Length: 398
Image 1: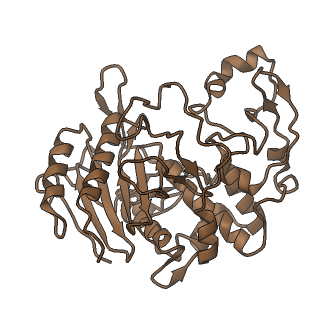
Image 2: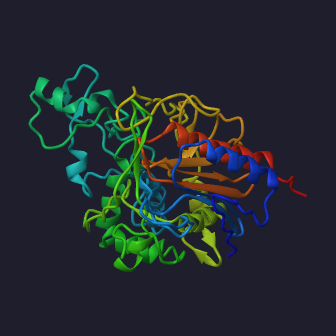
């Protein structure tokens, strides 16, 4: 596997058009991003990376593709693969009720449009969870959940969980659905999710920097984070704090990984579940996972601005949550972009990490930084600028 290194001062590019080098250099200088790694991954596994800034604020080094980032919701794609592996083995189906597997999930009540608490009528299936149509939300995708502490007093809510927002299969709401997928994988496999991923996904693909609990010997590779003040625009650099050990393995957002590791995963996806002779999904299963699912309704969950999500307009979309795109069993499915071909896969993580999988042109992009709020306008504009430069400089296929 080929790797290319770039520094802030030279952005030295070994095999890419100098136009990308020069324009990206200018964009980074004007981006107000303190540290970032971005790279292009080809179907054959070759990778080209650009890096800028230190790995930690008190270091005089240059961050690179082997540093470890919290990837948050970019974990979801691996959670989907894990679930589809179990489907492939015949241990679960996409459309059978999950009441007996996860009764604590199926029994969760629903708060309707009139703020009335009602009992669920429909069972939840694995397909509902993978497509975010089970009724679970996040506080930043639901106005009700964003003011839940206030609302639960109004409705005299006494349960120790947040209710679902609609009957399963009736609408789309991006939320904690893949968290439940992780629990399902653990229940069926009899393994905790860390061990399951190591045995069935990250281990076989040699993603040795991808963990829920980063091993002590890799701790020095973990990067620091920062936060942009929404009023002043000033970037506050946080001191490095080691994450505590967890036994709650969250398939919806708990992994840490490196750009090079995630690049291996993306290369595997470009090859429909196989990389360098290692197969983690059959081609038929991959095609099922990558097929658009929301043909009756689209991603209509865009929500009002809240403290940890920046919803300012940007790029060739009005914001990252695009209500005109579709959803597969693993990621968003592009149906409305100037640059990306129809059917390109994409998603992101809360700390402003992004990926794109272009199946038509047979390459993927990965972008990692550690900034809050999510959808930070400077970070998103840098990612989309890089993406546009890559498309602008694509060589026609013979």
